[in-house]
Image 1 (tube, rainbow, N blue to C red):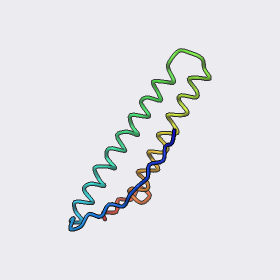
Image 2: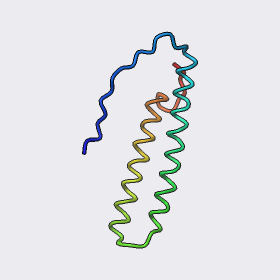
Image 3: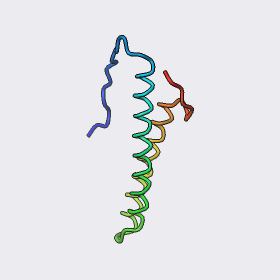
Image 4: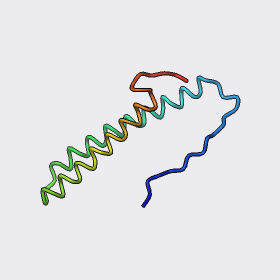
Length: 85
């Protein structure tokens, strides 16, 4: 399974900068909600019964997903500083 998504540049002619900034802000907010949800799930997984190795691996994979989402927010906001485009 590939987790690479080919991106094609989208030219949006005539869009006001405020609309693009709004779209970025909405996306950042959605990503932050996902990060919070992944943290909650990680805590939930840590309390599950079962083989410790399986629990540790699942928790680590969720932590990795959270880190990837945090990087996405950093990229979108230029290192956490909100810069409207």
